[in-house]
Length: 425
Ligand code: NCD
Ligand code: ZN
Image (cartoon, rainbow, N blue to C red; front, side, top):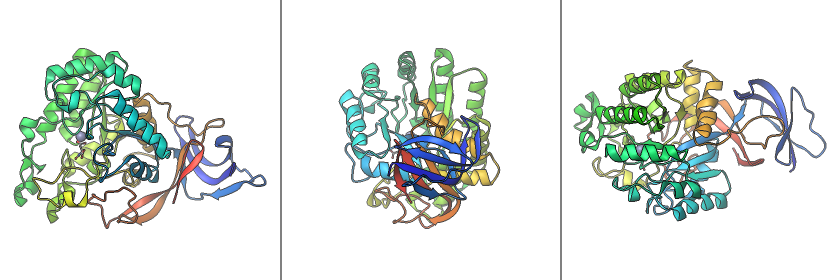
C-alpha cells in the first residue's frame, strides 16, 4: 500500500518541538504531510492510533545478537524481530561473538546479515583488542572503514590502563570512541550478586560496587587527560553516577548509558534463588536505582541501552557460579522507561531523547525525524496498554528475564523503518 494515513496520534519529536495531536500522510514511504486533520485520500490505508504516541523510533547501542557463533541463543534475524517489537530500528551488536568481531570481514558479516533480515539497521561495534584478550589493539581504522560504529571489549573490561589509554587516543583520532564494560576483575573476582544484605543472607559470592566504580574513575581520568571520548557501558551504581557528574563538570568527554533492568530491578530478584537475576554488572539496591533514575532525568546519563543478552534456558538453569550473566531487554525498555515518566522523573520528550535521539547521535547517525519530506521511521506505542511477559510475547530466541510472568504497561503497536511497517502488534 503506497498511501497511509496515521490518524489521531500524539506526535512527539523534541528535534522539531512537535508535541501534540496530528495526522500523518505517508506516500511511498515518505512523510508528505503532517496536519491536525487529514482525510484519507482514495485508496489510502487509514490507521487510527487514538491514545497512542508517535515518536522517532529507538536506537539501542548495546545488544548481543550472538551471531556468529552462538546462534542457538539469538541470531541477527530473531534479534531484529525482537528489536522492532521493542520500537527499535537501529541496534549495535556487541563484538563478544565467536569469533570476536575483530576483523573487517566479520564487521561486514554482521552488516550484511542485518540487511538480509531487513527489519532494522544492524550495526556492529568491533573489539578494542584482538580476540578481546586485552593485549593487542585491533586495526581500528580498517574496522571503522568496514562499518564498525565504535570499539568495545564488552563482556570484559579493558583491564590494562596503558592499553586503554592507547585505545582511547586511537579511536578518538579517527572520530570514533571506546566504550568500556567497567569492572576491575581483581575486585569482582568470583562475585555473583551485588555485595549487600541479600548476597550475605543468601550466601551468594559478593560482587562489590567498587569493582565498577574504580574502573569508571580510571576511564574518566584517562578521558580527561587524553581529551578523548569514552563511553561507560551499563552504569549501575550511585557512586558511578557521582564520578561521571564530576568528570563531566571537569569537561571530560564522557558519556554513559543505563539499562532498563538497572533502572527497575534490585538484588531482591535473587530472593527466589533464580539465576535469571544474574547479570553483569549485578542488580543493585534501591539507592542505586534512585540515583540512576535522577541521573537519566538530569542528563548525567545520556542514553538508555538494553544490553539485551540472550542465553539458552539450559545455561540459565546452571548453578549460580556457572550460569552466564545476562538478560534480554529489547521489548521491555519502553515500558520500563515509561514507568519513570508515569512516576514523574521526566517527561515523554526526555524519553525520546534518551531512547532515540542521543543514542543515534552517539554513533554518528542523524536520528529519525517526524517531519514532512522525511522517510517514515517512527514507533507508535500505546502508553497505557498492559501486557504479560511470557514465552509467547517474547520474540527473542531466548527467554531469560526475571520479568517472566509479570505485567508491563506500554506496548509498541507499529514500527516503521525505511518507509515500511516492519512491526505490527
Ligand atoms: C553480557 C553477555 O551475555 O554477553 N552479559 C551481561 O550480563 N551483561 C556481557 C556484558 O554486556 O557484559
Ligand atoms: Zn558489559
